[in-house]
Length: 115
Image (cartoon, rainbow, N blue to C red):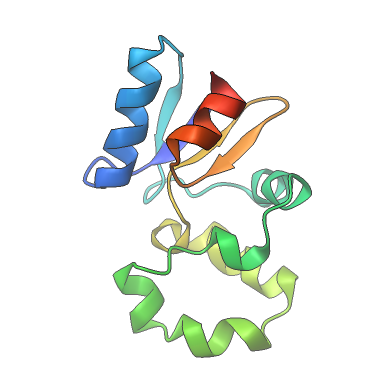
């Protein structure tokens, strides 16, 4: 599993702790240094997430770039390009394996997907 996260993120730490307790292996990728690729974000969209779900709405970059106002006017292609260029904008953690994707951390969703 690829685990796109940020070491200083409390939500990411909770998710890693959950995965560690379940002995589920993952490769940690610092989302700020290596944002997910478009193909990976498209997997999240194919899994039922909306483009809006992929944005870290509580992050400083989201506020600084006024994404609340900009996002509704963007095409999905523009939004994906923005996300792949700025990992701080991506909701984390983003976890992917060959068949499954989760965005954010929710213990129930993790149990259903990874447990």
